[in-house]
Structures are given as structure tokens and as C-alpha cells.
Image (cartoon, rainbow, N blue to C red; front, side, top):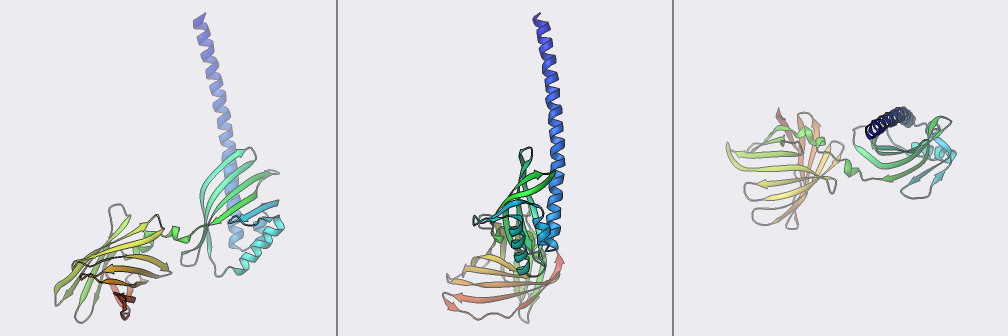
Length: 304
């Protein structure tokens, strides 16, 4: 009898398990369809944004939808949301592109979904000019997914700075004047998380100065930093900021004889084989130094 009971119970568990798995499969299949529908909603919103069509954007909201930015006063109702987008599109200069990063999607109930995304607005050069986090409550109305509530917070564009934006530096570079020539080589480290640089300066064919440089992303402050160590004992650090093809490095260092040096190095990426370099706003122990003229630097060979 016990063996029969065990057999019956085992069979019942198997049947229940199969039924539960079948129910799971059906739920998963339905959610896959919902995910596709929400992806389509996102594509249509992107298309409406590219066309600067405020009415088309607002059409994807519920009639009494809400938009709340930076915890401010909510904009309520489809008509007011359409007006807000129309005003925004009027003041949007140029032709920036909107990029959407999907951070998460979950379904709290049968007809609701919560989507979390990161938005980045990029200019014609591909530089991030604005960014935000967005949390959206989506609801199913009449078989269609609609936006019910959006909460959005601005985020610092510095968080999108990537060392890959300096990949054009990789390779060997050369600049020469009547009395002096400098060769600099940049390469990725083993894991492509730092760029390593080495430079040598020669006069009359003899090395008179050399040094090393490391460039990396500071993931705490969201900036690119560099550190330079010279063969004569001088050293310094800098923070890189980008403006299109121009990179400015705000430098603070110490000379071999213990004096404080500040200033900015300006790199302008002209093309794949050329950049210019200039030192500006320099001081030595608080005393101003003259700016240098822009110096043309040319590539000797590509790097890895």
C-alpha cells in the first residue's frame, strides 16, 4: 500500500509539475509578445522624436498621463504633454539624435509594466549634450500599451565620457623643429582600460628628455584623467574635457626643482594623421607664462 501511495503521489507531482511548467511557458510566451509590443512602442516614439512630431509622441500616452521631471510639478493630460513637447522641439537647436539604453523591464501585473531607460541626446559629432534617467509606468488599454506616468531625472553628461573617444591617439606621433624633435607613442594596455604613452625628446640626435603617461577613466567622478612622469623628476596630473574635436587637459604638476606648474594643454584632432598641441594659461609658482603657438603633430604609424 505504501509503495502504491508513493507511486500515485509521484505521478501526481509529475502531473502538477508539467501543468505548472506549461502555465509558465504560456506566461513567458505572452510576456514575449508584450515585450515585442513595448519595443514597437519605443521605436514609434523614437521616430516621432526624430520628426519632431509632438502630437505623435503624445498619442502614445494615456489621456490622463503624467510627466514629472526632476521631481518638479507634474504635467498632466495628453494635451499638456503634447504642448510641452512642441515647446521643447522649438528650442532644440541643430539635429541631435536620441539614443535609448534599455535598463530594465518588469510586469507587476497582467496589464502594467515598468520600464527603466537611460536617454542620451547626441549632436552631429556624436557627443552627448544631454542625458537623463527615465522610469515609466506602462498600461494596457484596449489591447494597446500606453505610457501612463513618466518620472525623469537629469544625469551628468560626464558619466558618458569614454576613453574610446581618445582612440585616435593610438599610434606613433612626431613633431620636429630646427633644434628639437619629439616622438610620442600611445597604445592600449592589456585590457583596454588605460592608454599608455611614452615620449622622447632629442636634440642633435641625442635623447635629452623622456617620460611616460597613463590616461584612464575615473569612474567615481566620471572624467578622464592622465598622469605624466618625466625622466628629469617632474610629474603631473590632468583632467580631460572634450568640446567636439578639441580636448583640453587642465594640468597641475611639479617641476624637477620643486616648483608648482599649472596650465592647460589643448589637443585638436584635425584628421586621422594630424593633431595640434598648444600650452595655454600656464603659471610657474603663480607667475604667468606665455602661451605657446599651436604645434602640428603628425602620425608616423598606426598602433594597436
